[in-house]
Length: 260
Image 1 (cartoon, rainbow, N blue to C red):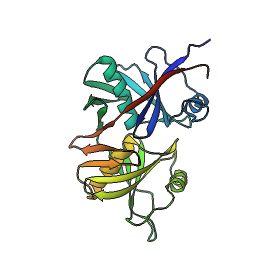
Image 2 (cartoon, rainbow, N blue to C red):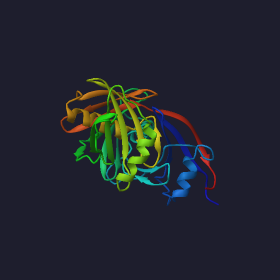
Image 3 (tube, rainbow, N blue to C red):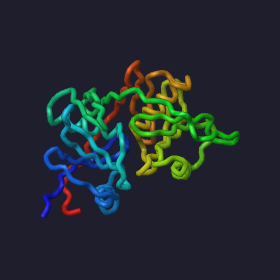
Image 4 (cartoon, rainbow, N blue to C red):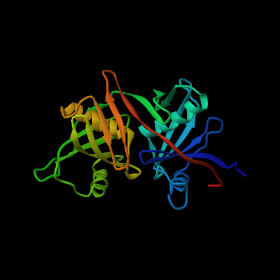
C-alpha cells in the first residue's frame, strides 16, 4: 500500500493550490488523479496541483498541473506559494526555483508577502478581432512562459467573461489564458482571469504580469502597477531586464491524502 500523500493547501488572492513535496519520491501523475485532488467536492480542491521536486541548478523545481489534469508551463502565484514554503523551511530571505528550465529568484518582502522575478515577456501578434460593437477596445497576446490574451475593456461595457473565456479556447491550439482589464488609473487596474485548464479564477500571477506588460506596451500604464481583483491585490513592476511579481500568500491547512 502506498504511503499517504502529505499536502499543503495554499491561497494567493483566491487562486488556490495543493502543494506536494516530491523531492524524495517523484510520482508519475495521471490526469484523473490530478482531477480527483483538485475536485472541490470529492478532493481537496484547487485551481492547480503544484509539485516540488529536486533541481540541478536551483533550490528546487516546480511542476504544475491544471485542475483538468493538463500540464501547465508557468504559474506566477504558484511560484510565490512554493517559495513561501521553501523560505520557511530554509529560514532564509532568498531562494531560487526552477520552472521549465528557467531559474526564478524569490524573496520574502514581509512575513506573508513574496516577490518573484520573471524574465521579460514577449508580445505576439494578436488573433482576436476587435469589432466596432465590442466591449473591448484593444487586445494583446503576451507570452510569459505560457500564453495569455489580454483584453482591455471599454469603461461602460461588461459582458459574460466566463462565456467569452470558454469560446476563445477554440481559436487557439492548446487553449489560452484570457484576461479582461479595466483601467482604473495609470498605476492601477482591475482584472478578471480565465485560466486554460481551470476556468474562472480570482487571481492569476502570470496573467497579471501579462496585463501590466501589455498596458506598458500600449502606453496605457506606468511600469509599476497595482493589480486588483475581487479578493485583494498584488503588484507588478516592469524593469529593464525583468518583471517583479509581489503579493501575499496564505497557508490554509495541511493534511494527507490516502489512495488515489
